[in-house]
Length: 481
Image (cartoon, rainbow, N blue to C red; front, side, top):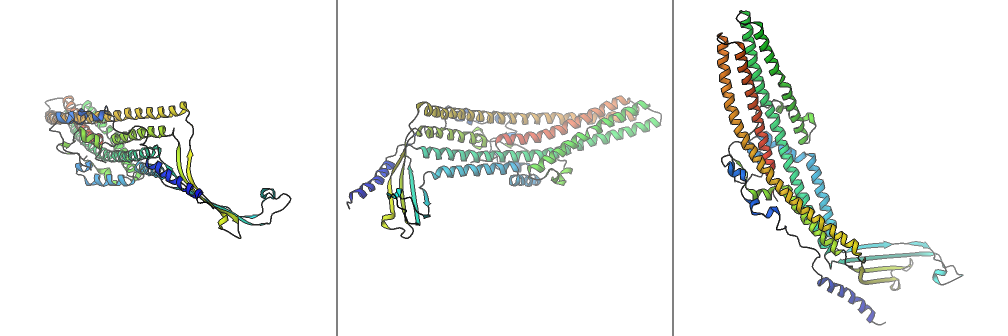
């Protein structure tokens, strides 16, 4: 037998290997952040405007990774760690990341050798006509047909590489999305805890006002019994007491709602909130200057910015996938088989094999292929616009949070001064009324002003804590790649 045919067959894989060595660069644009993006503008990376305007309140020092520890509250630290371990939104985001990672592994599998096998034992006989023996019945016996197929796609036009690039970027976007959920879970836990304690603090202030009014009512009743005041003053005192007591139930409801929310954030049933928090009446606050960093650190730290940038990368890579789909797909294939009678398996005359390139090409329909490329390009422009929007939103949210916190500090200082003045006026009016030098209306007005000042100050204290948490949420929570 001539050796030429096997030699020609062996030349086929060598030719395919040569084609692979000379493979072209992947089709489509190579990814880079568009130079016109907001994130690349120099002003976006500068120190934050509100930080510079309130340098005595905020510093350019880096935000700590675990910002909630700035509250110096061990109970809050434990709650945040519990939430990060058991929160259902985090479990969902983690499972979503695992799914995207599996999709990446599927894409990467396209670069490996693919194989398939078959095996078909049979007992019987074929027809006589199929064996070119008309009128004869072949003998009944055991036959088999088995084979092995191996193939490897030569990624000459980069479709596999672009697909893997897009899948890798999607995986990184899913990781950023998981970090974003962590930011919201930590901030939500801190906010619910602070609201529960702040509601307790407001309840304490409201109860003090109730106690003062009860004392005022007792004094008025004694004066009435002594004949020094009329029944109208006592009725006014009782009415004021009822109004102050009416403020207590909404505050209790607000605290209970915060406790229920805190329980579910930490992965527990609503009624399984920590019972000791029901008596918390001192909201945690960060004292002193708050570290906020600068614009460049914010752009690196915010997970939603990283997620949008990675999604832009994935969209850009999919342009290359769409372009490469217009070109042929070439695979190197190897087939081995054996077919014969069961009584004599794997004889030389039962073996078959073949080696060579496998070419498949769906002839491009210009309208369809061009439309797919146009879709990918439009999706990339959409992702670029979304990326810019996320950056602008992040900067706006941070500047707004800085401004609101600074202004609430100013408001709290004014409310504190107003409360101190109202307390002094109320004490003087109470002494004058007891001495019979002023009427009860003057004393009642002073007590009302003090109660209102106490309530406003307590509400401002609660708002300050909420503004601090909102600020840390806007800053990105400390998760960085």
